[in-house]
Length: 156
Length: 266
Image 1 (tube, chains in turn red, yellow):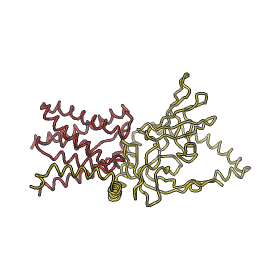
Image 2: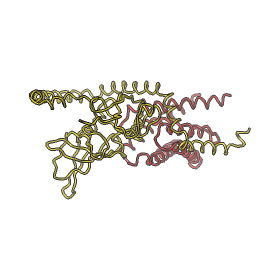
Image 3: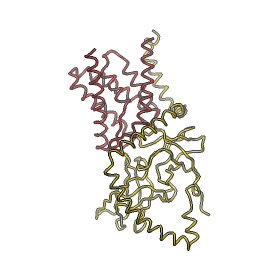
Image 4: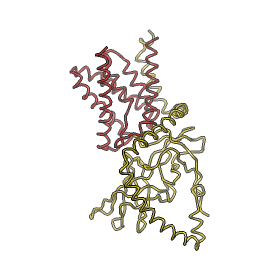
Protein backbone atom coordinates (compact mmCIF):
# COMPACT_ATOMS: atom_id res chain seq x y z
CA UNK A 1 0.00 0.00 0.00
CA UNK A 2 2.82 2.37 0.98
CA UNK A 3 4.62 1.56 -2.26
CA UNK A 4 1.59 2.58 -4.35
CA UNK A 5 1.23 5.77 -2.31
CA UNK A 6 4.79 6.77 -3.27
CA UNK A 7 3.97 6.27 -6.95
CA UNK A 8 0.83 8.41 -6.58
CA UNK A 9 2.80 11.16 -4.84
CA UNK A 10 5.33 11.09 -7.70
CA UNK A 11 2.55 11.56 -10.27
CA UNK A 12 1.17 14.56 -8.33
CA UNK A 13 4.62 16.09 -7.86
CA UNK A 14 5.42 15.76 -11.57
CA UNK A 15 2.04 17.28 -12.44
CA UNK A 16 2.89 20.28 -10.27
CA UNK A 17 6.36 20.48 -11.79
CA UNK A 18 4.93 20.51 -15.33
CA UNK A 19 2.59 23.40 -14.43
CA UNK A 20 5.40 25.34 -12.74
CA UNK A 21 7.73 24.73 -15.68
CA UNK A 22 5.24 25.89 -18.34
CA UNK A 23 3.42 28.70 -16.52
CA UNK A 24 5.64 30.11 -13.76
CA UNK A 25 9.33 29.54 -14.48
CA UNK A 26 9.04 30.76 -18.12
CA UNK A 27 8.95 34.30 -16.72
CA UNK A 28 12.44 33.87 -15.27
CA UNK A 29 14.32 32.85 -18.40
CA UNK A 30 18.02 33.74 -18.47
CA UNK A 31 19.29 34.17 -22.05
CA UNK A 32 16.24 32.28 -23.27
CA UNK A 33 16.62 29.33 -20.91
CA UNK A 34 14.53 28.26 -17.95
CA UNK A 35 14.68 25.29 -15.61
CA UNK A 36 13.50 21.90 -16.81
CA UNK A 37 12.23 20.54 -13.49
CA UNK A 38 11.06 17.26 -14.96
CA UNK A 39 14.41 16.47 -16.59
CA UNK A 40 16.25 17.41 -13.38
CA UNK A 41 13.96 15.15 -11.30
CA UNK A 42 14.26 12.20 -13.68
CA UNK A 43 18.05 12.55 -13.70
CA UNK A 44 18.33 12.74 -9.90
CA UNK A 45 15.92 9.88 -9.24
CA UNK A 46 17.75 7.59 -11.67
CA UNK A 47 21.21 8.65 -10.50
CA UNK A 48 20.53 8.33 -6.77
CA UNK A 49 18.45 5.15 -6.61
CA UNK A 50 19.79 1.63 -6.14
CA UNK A 51 20.79 -0.39 -9.21
CA UNK A 52 17.85 -2.80 -9.15
CA UNK A 53 15.16 -0.23 -8.37
CA UNK A 54 12.62 0.56 -11.12
CA UNK A 55 11.26 3.74 -9.56
CA UNK A 56 13.43 5.92 -11.78
CA UNK A 57 12.06 4.29 -14.91
CA UNK A 58 8.50 4.92 -13.72
CA UNK A 59 9.46 8.55 -13.02
CA UNK A 60 10.86 8.87 -16.56
CA UNK A 61 7.62 7.46 -17.98
CA UNK A 62 5.39 9.85 -16.01
CA UNK A 63 7.66 12.86 -16.60
CA UNK A 64 7.74 12.14 -20.32
CA UNK A 65 3.94 11.89 -20.43
CA UNK A 66 3.55 15.35 -18.89
CA UNK A 67 6.10 16.81 -21.32
CA UNK A 68 4.20 15.17 -24.21
CA UNK A 69 0.96 16.80 -23.11
CA UNK A 70 2.46 20.28 -23.40
CA UNK A 71 4.41 19.51 -26.55
CA UNK A 72 3.06 20.00 -30.10
CA UNK A 73 5.13 17.08 -31.30
CA UNK A 74 4.06 13.43 -31.55
CA UNK A 75 2.59 11.99 -28.39
CA UNK A 76 5.09 9.59 -26.86
CA UNK A 77 8.20 11.40 -28.10
CA UNK A 78 9.23 12.73 -24.69
CA UNK A 79 8.05 9.57 -22.93
CA UNK A 80 10.36 7.42 -25.04
CA UNK A 81 13.15 10.01 -24.81
CA UNK A 82 13.09 10.12 -21.00
CA UNK A 83 12.82 6.32 -20.80
CA UNK A 84 15.96 6.05 -22.94
CA UNK A 85 17.71 8.64 -20.76
CA UNK A 86 16.70 6.73 -17.62
CA UNK A 87 18.06 3.42 -18.94
CA UNK A 88 21.26 5.16 -20.13
CA UNK A 89 21.86 6.70 -16.69
CA UNK A 90 21.50 3.28 -15.04
CA UNK A 91 23.86 1.69 -17.55
CA UNK A 92 26.27 4.62 -17.26
CA UNK A 93 26.43 4.32 -13.49
CA UNK A 94 27.23 0.61 -13.80
CA UNK A 95 29.97 1.27 -16.35
CA UNK A 96 31.57 4.23 -14.61
CA UNK A 97 31.55 2.86 -11.03
CA UNK A 98 33.62 5.86 -9.97
CA UNK A 99 33.08 8.51 -7.33
CA UNK A 100 30.06 10.78 -7.67
CA UNK A 101 32.32 13.75 -8.39
CA UNK A 102 33.18 12.18 -11.75
CA UNK A 103 30.08 10.20 -12.67
CA UNK A 104 27.58 12.94 -11.73
CA UNK A 105 28.80 15.68 -14.10
CA UNK A 106 29.61 13.17 -16.85
CA UNK A 107 26.17 11.61 -16.78
CA UNK A 108 24.50 15.01 -16.51
CA UNK A 109 26.36 16.28 -19.58
CA UNK A 110 25.33 13.13 -21.46
CA UNK A 111 21.69 13.52 -20.32
CA UNK A 112 21.55 17.18 -21.31
CA UNK A 113 23.16 16.70 -24.72
CA UNK A 114 21.04 13.66 -25.53
CA UNK A 115 17.88 15.60 -24.59
CA UNK A 116 18.83 18.71 -26.57
CA UNK A 117 19.93 16.81 -29.67
CA UNK A 118 16.68 14.83 -29.65
CA UNK A 119 14.62 18.04 -29.36
CA UNK A 120 16.28 19.41 -32.52
CA UNK A 121 13.33 17.74 -34.26
CA UNK A 122 11.09 20.37 -32.60
CA UNK A 123 13.37 23.36 -32.93
CA UNK A 124 15.96 22.75 -35.66
CA UNK A 125 18.23 25.64 -34.68
CA UNK A 126 21.31 25.32 -32.50
CA UNK A 127 21.70 28.44 -30.42
CA UNK A 128 25.02 27.91 -28.67
CA UNK A 129 24.54 30.65 -26.08
CA UNK A 130 21.07 29.38 -25.11
CA UNK A 131 22.30 25.80 -24.84
CA UNK A 132 25.21 26.83 -22.61
CA UNK A 133 22.98 28.96 -20.40
CA UNK A 134 20.39 26.16 -20.17
CA UNK A 135 23.09 23.65 -19.27
CA UNK A 136 24.55 25.78 -16.47
CA UNK A 137 21.15 26.77 -15.01
CA UNK A 138 19.96 23.18 -14.86
CA UNK A 139 23.33 21.76 -13.77
CA UNK A 140 23.69 24.19 -10.86
CA UNK A 141 20.22 23.43 -9.52
CA UNK A 142 20.64 19.67 -10.00
CA UNK A 143 23.99 19.74 -8.20
CA UNK A 144 22.60 21.80 -5.31
CA UNK A 145 19.69 19.42 -4.80
CA UNK A 146 22.01 16.39 -5.01
CA UNK A 147 24.44 17.88 -2.46
CA UNK A 148 21.60 18.75 -0.07
CA UNK A 149 20.18 15.23 -0.20
CA UNK A 150 23.62 13.68 0.13
CA UNK A 151 24.32 15.80 3.21
CA UNK A 152 20.91 14.94 4.70
CA UNK A 153 21.46 11.22 4.08
CA UNK A 154 24.87 11.36 5.83
CA UNK A 155 23.41 13.27 8.78
CA UNK A 156 20.69 10.69 9.32
CA UNK B 1 2.11 -11.52 -9.27
CA UNK B 2 0.31 -11.22 -12.60
CA UNK B 3 1.89 -7.81 -13.19
CA UNK B 4 5.41 -9.19 -12.59
CA UNK B 5 4.76 -12.13 -14.90
CA UNK B 6 3.57 -10.06 -17.83
CA UNK B 7 5.77 -7.02 -17.10
CA UNK B 8 7.28 -6.69 -20.57
CA UNK B 9 3.93 -7.17 -22.29
CA UNK B 10 2.32 -4.48 -20.10
CA UNK B 11 5.14 -2.04 -20.89
CA UNK B 12 4.81 -2.71 -24.63
CA UNK B 13 1.03 -2.25 -24.47
CA UNK B 14 1.41 1.02 -22.55
CA UNK B 15 3.88 2.40 -25.09
CA UNK B 16 1.64 1.27 -27.96
CA UNK B 17 -1.34 2.98 -26.29
CA UNK B 18 0.61 6.24 -25.93
CA UNK B 19 1.78 6.13 -29.55
CA UNK B 20 -1.77 5.27 -30.60
CA UNK B 21 -2.93 8.57 -29.12
CA UNK B 22 -1.31 10.30 -32.12
CA UNK B 23 -4.06 8.80 -34.27
CA UNK B 24 -6.92 8.53 -31.81
CA UNK B 25 -7.80 10.90 -29.03
CA UNK B 26 -4.52 12.70 -28.49
CA UNK B 27 -6.15 16.09 -28.95
CA UNK B 28 -8.92 15.20 -26.54
CA UNK B 29 -6.40 14.07 -23.91
CA UNK B 30 -4.46 17.34 -24.23
CA UNK B 31 -7.65 19.45 -24.18
CA UNK B 32 -8.96 17.66 -21.07
CA UNK B 33 -5.63 18.11 -19.30
CA UNK B 34 -5.53 21.84 -20.16
CA UNK B 35 -9.15 22.23 -19.04
CA UNK B 36 -8.46 20.66 -15.64
CA UNK B 37 -5.17 22.52 -15.19
CA UNK B 38 -6.14 25.94 -16.56
CA UNK B 39 -7.24 27.48 -13.20
CA UNK B 40 -3.87 26.57 -11.64
CA UNK B 41 -1.97 27.51 -14.83
CA UNK B 42 -3.56 30.98 -14.82
CA UNK B 43 -2.60 31.47 -11.16
CA UNK B 44 1.00 30.43 -11.84
CA UNK B 45 1.17 32.59 -14.99
CA UNK B 46 -0.06 35.72 -13.17
CA UNK B 47 2.18 35.00 -10.16
CA UNK B 48 5.18 34.53 -12.46
CA UNK B 49 4.47 37.82 -14.24
CA UNK B 50 4.09 39.67 -10.96
CA UNK B 51 7.26 38.31 -9.38
CA UNK B 52 9.38 38.78 -12.51
CA UNK B 53 8.11 42.38 -12.93
CA UNK B 54 9.02 43.14 -9.32
CA UNK B 55 12.57 41.78 -9.60
CA UNK B 56 12.95 43.09 -13.14
CA UNK B 57 12.17 46.62 -12.00
CA UNK B 58 14.65 46.37 -9.10
CA UNK B 59 17.49 45.32 -11.43
CA UNK B 60 16.65 47.73 -14.21
CA UNK B 61 16.36 51.02 -12.31
CA UNK B 62 19.30 52.68 -14.09
CA UNK B 63 18.14 51.44 -17.49
CA UNK B 64 14.59 52.61 -16.75
CA UNK B 65 15.88 56.06 -15.84
CA UNK B 66 17.74 56.39 -19.15
CA UNK B 67 14.75 55.03 -21.09
CA UNK B 68 12.48 57.54 -19.33
CA UNK B 69 14.73 60.46 -20.33
CA UNK B 70 14.88 59.25 -23.95
CA UNK B 71 11.12 58.81 -24.03
CA UNK B 72 10.51 62.28 -22.68
CA UNK B 73 12.44 63.65 -25.62
CA UNK B 74 10.57 61.42 -28.00
CA UNK B 75 7.27 62.59 -26.46
CA UNK B 76 8.09 66.18 -27.28
CA UNK B 77 8.79 65.28 -30.90
CA UNK B 78 5.56 63.27 -31.05
CA UNK B 79 3.57 66.16 -29.61
CA UNK B 80 4.87 68.33 -32.42
CA UNK B 81 3.87 65.71 -34.99
CA UNK B 82 0.47 65.38 -33.32
CA UNK B 83 -0.14 69.10 -33.70
CA UNK B 84 0.62 68.82 -37.44
CA UNK B 85 -1.64 65.78 -37.77
CA UNK B 86 -4.51 67.58 -36.05
CA UNK B 87 -4.26 70.37 -38.59
CA UNK B 88 -4.35 67.83 -41.44
CA UNK B 89 -7.27 66.02 -39.85
CA UNK B 90 -9.36 69.18 -39.90
CA UNK B 91 -8.85 69.53 -43.63
CA UNK B 92 -9.17 65.92 -44.76
CA UNK B 93 -12.33 63.92 -43.87
CA UNK B 94 -10.95 60.59 -45.15
CA UNK B 95 -7.81 60.92 -43.00
CA UNK B 96 -9.96 61.71 -39.97
CA UNK B 97 -11.96 58.49 -40.47
CA UNK B 98 -8.76 56.41 -40.78
CA UNK B 99 -7.35 57.90 -37.57
CA UNK B 100 -10.53 57.13 -35.68
CA UNK B 101 -10.64 53.47 -36.77
CA UNK B 102 -10.14 51.06 -33.89
CA UNK B 103 -8.97 47.47 -34.20
CA UNK B 104 -12.51 46.21 -33.68
CA UNK B 105 -13.60 47.98 -36.86
CA UNK B 106 -10.91 46.30 -38.95
CA UNK B 107 -11.04 42.80 -37.47
CA UNK B 108 -13.42 40.38 -35.80
CA UNK B 109 -11.54 39.69 -32.58
CA UNK B 110 -11.71 37.05 -29.89
CA UNK B 111 -10.25 37.83 -26.47
CA UNK B 112 -8.04 35.10 -24.98
CA UNK B 113 -5.71 34.61 -22.04
CA UNK B 114 -2.22 33.07 -22.07
CA UNK B 115 -1.83 30.19 -19.61
CA UNK B 116 1.46 28.52 -20.54
CA UNK B 117 4.55 28.86 -22.70
CA UNK B 118 6.70 26.17 -24.22
CA UNK B 119 10.16 27.77 -24.58
CA UNK B 120 11.75 24.93 -26.59
CA UNK B 121 9.06 25.20 -29.25
CA UNK B 122 8.60 29.01 -29.19
CA UNK B 123 4.90 28.59 -28.61
CA UNK B 124 2.25 29.63 -26.10
CA UNK B 125 -1.01 28.08 -24.97
CA UNK B 126 -4.11 30.28 -24.92
CA UNK B 127 -7.72 29.85 -23.81
CA UNK B 128 -10.24 29.54 -26.63
CA UNK B 129 -10.36 26.83 -29.27
CA UNK B 130 -12.47 25.23 -31.99
CA UNK B 131 -15.63 25.70 -29.88
CA UNK B 132 -15.07 29.48 -30.12
CA UNK B 133 -14.54 29.42 -33.89
CA UNK B 134 -10.75 29.54 -33.68
CA UNK B 135 -8.91 27.63 -36.39
CA UNK B 136 -5.36 27.15 -37.66
CA UNK B 137 -3.35 30.06 -39.10
CA UNK B 138 -5.47 32.78 -37.47
CA UNK B 139 -3.20 35.67 -36.39
CA UNK B 140 -2.82 36.53 -32.71
CA UNK B 141 -2.15 40.12 -31.60
CA UNK B 142 -1.97 42.27 -28.47
CA UNK B 143 -4.48 45.08 -27.84
CA UNK B 144 -1.93 47.56 -29.30
CA UNK B 145 -2.04 45.70 -32.62
CA UNK B 146 1.37 44.07 -32.10
CA UNK B 147 1.72 40.74 -33.87
CA UNK B 148 2.47 37.80 -31.54
CA UNK B 149 2.05 34.74 -33.76
CA UNK B 150 -0.52 32.50 -35.39
CA UNK B 151 -2.66 29.57 -34.33
CA UNK B 152 -0.84 26.30 -34.96
CA UNK B 153 -3.22 23.85 -33.35
CA UNK B 154 -6.78 24.36 -32.16
CA UNK B 155 -8.21 21.98 -29.55
CA UNK B 156 -11.77 22.15 -28.30
CA UNK B 157 -11.21 24.80 -25.60
CA UNK B 158 -7.56 25.82 -26.05
CA UNK B 159 -5.19 26.71 -28.84
CA UNK B 160 -1.44 26.57 -29.42
CA UNK B 161 0.11 29.69 -30.90
CA UNK B 162 3.49 29.60 -32.60
CA UNK B 163 5.29 32.85 -31.98
CA UNK B 164 6.63 34.93 -34.87
CA UNK B 165 10.10 34.10 -33.48
CA UNK B 166 9.56 30.38 -34.15
CA UNK B 167 12.01 29.18 -36.88
CA UNK B 168 9.05 27.65 -38.74
CA UNK B 169 7.53 31.12 -39.20
CA UNK B 170 8.50 33.27 -42.20
CA UNK B 171 6.37 36.09 -43.58
CA UNK B 172 6.49 39.22 -45.74
CA UNK B 173 7.06 42.56 -44.04
CA UNK B 174 7.44 46.19 -44.95
CA UNK B 175 9.99 48.39 -43.25
CA UNK B 176 8.88 51.98 -42.88
CA UNK B 177 11.81 54.34 -42.89
CA UNK B 178 12.38 57.24 -45.29
CA UNK B 179 11.00 54.98 -48.02
CA UNK B 180 8.92 51.80 -47.70
CA UNK B 181 11.02 48.69 -48.17
CA UNK B 182 9.87 45.07 -48.48
CA UNK B 183 11.59 42.06 -46.93
CA UNK B 184 11.06 38.69 -45.25
CA UNK B 185 10.95 38.18 -41.49
CA UNK B 186 12.07 34.72 -40.39
CA UNK B 187 11.96 33.45 -36.83
CA UNK B 188 15.30 32.44 -35.32
CA UNK B 189 14.09 31.01 -32.03
CA UNK B 190 14.88 32.42 -28.60
CA UNK B 191 12.65 35.48 -29.20
CA UNK B 192 14.65 36.69 -32.23
CA UNK B 193 13.67 37.42 -35.83
CA UNK B 194 15.96 37.67 -38.84
CA UNK B 195 15.27 40.15 -41.62
CA UNK B 196 16.11 38.76 -45.05
CA UNK B 197 15.95 39.56 -48.76
CA UNK B 198 15.94 43.35 -48.55
CA UNK B 199 17.30 44.78 -51.84
CA UNK B 200 20.83 46.16 -51.48
CA UNK B 201 20.00 49.56 -52.92
CA UNK B 202 17.30 50.27 -50.31
CA UNK B 203 18.06 52.32 -47.20
CA UNK B 204 17.74 50.32 -43.99
CA UNK B 205 18.60 51.72 -40.59
CA UNK B 206 18.36 50.75 -36.94
CA UNK B 207 15.07 51.81 -35.41
CA UNK B 208 12.99 51.48 -38.60
CA UNK B 209 9.54 50.11 -37.74
CA UNK B 210 8.59 46.76 -39.30
CA UNK B 211 4.96 46.00 -40.21
CA UNK B 212 3.14 43.10 -41.86
CA UNK B 213 2.00 43.20 -45.49
CA UNK B 214 -0.64 41.19 -47.30
CA UNK B 215 1.94 39.72 -49.72
CA UNK B 216 2.18 35.99 -49.10
CA UNK B 217 -1.24 35.98 -47.42
CA UNK B 218 0.11 35.19 -43.97
CA UNK B 219 -1.13 38.14 -41.97
CA UNK B 220 -3.34 41.21 -42.46
CA UNK B 221 -1.57 44.42 -43.44
CA UNK B 222 -0.32 46.94 -40.93
CA UNK B 223 0.27 44.85 -37.80
CA UNK B 224 3.31 45.93 -35.78
CA UNK B 225 6.11 43.37 -35.83
CA UNK B 226 9.08 45.17 -34.28
CA UNK B 227 11.94 47.44 -35.16
CA UNK B 228 15.22 46.89 -36.97
CA UNK B 229 17.92 46.28 -34.33
CA UNK B 230 20.79 45.25 -36.60
CA UNK B 231 21.68 45.81 -40.26
CA UNK B 232 23.94 43.45 -42.21
CA UNK B 233 25.08 44.76 -45.57
CA UNK B 234 27.75 43.19 -47.71
CA UNK B 235 28.58 44.75 -51.11
CA UNK B 236 28.83 41.57 -53.25
CA UNK B 237 25.53 40.16 -51.96
CA UNK B 238 22.36 41.05 -53.95
CA UNK B 239 20.38 41.43 -50.70
CA UNK B 240 20.98 42.91 -47.28
CA UNK B 241 19.49 41.74 -44.02
CA UNK B 242 19.55 42.23 -40.31
CA UNK B 243 17.66 41.50 -37.16
CA UNK B 244 14.30 42.64 -35.88
CA UNK B 245 13.60 43.17 -32.21
CA UNK B 246 9.99 42.00 -31.86
CA UNK B 247 7.62 44.35 -30.03
CA UNK B 248 5.64 41.55 -28.40
CA UNK B 249 8.59 40.76 -26.09
CA UNK B 250 8.07 44.19 -24.46
CA UNK B 251 4.36 43.58 -23.88
CA UNK B 252 2.75 41.67 -21.01
CA UNK B 253 1.59 38.50 -22.69
CA UNK B 254 -1.51 37.91 -20.67
CA UNK B 255 -4.58 39.00 -22.65
CA UNK B 256 -4.37 38.64 -26.42
CA UNK B 257 -6.72 38.77 -29.38
CA UNK B 258 -7.24 36.20 -32.10
CA UNK B 259 -8.17 37.75 -35.46
CA UNK B 260 -11.03 35.55 -36.60
CA UNK B 261 -11.92 37.67 -39.62
CA UNK B 262 -10.55 40.67 -41.50
CA UNK B 263 -13.27 43.08 -42.61
CA UNK B 264 -12.83 44.16 -46.22
CA UNK B 265 -12.65 47.93 -46.78
CA UNK B 266 -15.64 49.16 -48.82
